[in-house]
Length: 189
Image (cartoon, rainbow, N blue to C red; front, side):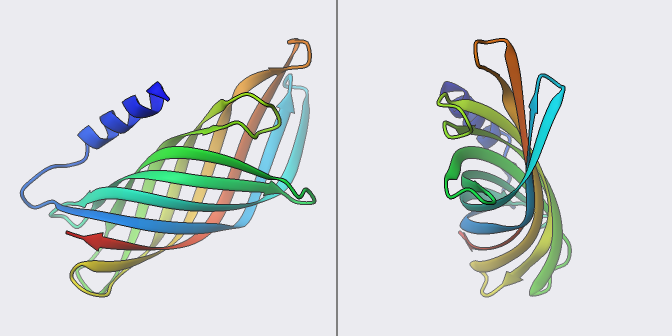
C-alpha cells in the first residue's frame, strides 16, 4: 500500500500545472476484444490461455494549452480465463498521456501510459504486484465546453512479479495482455 501512495504522490506531482491547464475528472469502461495470459514455470514450461477482461477506471487530470491530457487513474480490473467461471480481480494506479489533435468537436488522439497493479486472486493466495504498459488511440467528442465523451482502442500488457510455488523450488511468471474497446465521459472544470 505504501508503494501505491508514493506512486500516486509522484504521479500527481508531475501533472502539468500552468495557468492554461484545465482540471478534469472522468470515468472510463473497457471490455476486451482479445486477450491472453501466459504462465511460465522455471523458463521451461509455458501455458497460454485466452482471457476476457473488463475494467472500470476513475481518473483526475489536466488538459494543457496544447490540448494534451495527463491523467492519474484508479483502475478496477477483472480477468476471466475462458472455460473457467471464476473471475480474477486486480486494482491499480495508472498514469496516462493523451496527445490530442485538432480543436473541432471530434478530436482524434493517441496515448501511452504505465501503471502498477495488485491482486490476491492470481493462482496463489498472496498479494502480487504487476507493472503495466498501455498504448491507446481514439477520439474525444466534445458535447459541451465542460462535458466530453471518449472512445478508445487500447492495448495493455501487465507483467506480474515472479512467484515461488510448491516447495519454493519452482518459479512462476505471469503476463497478461489484452486489446480492449472502451468508452468514457469527462467533466472539465
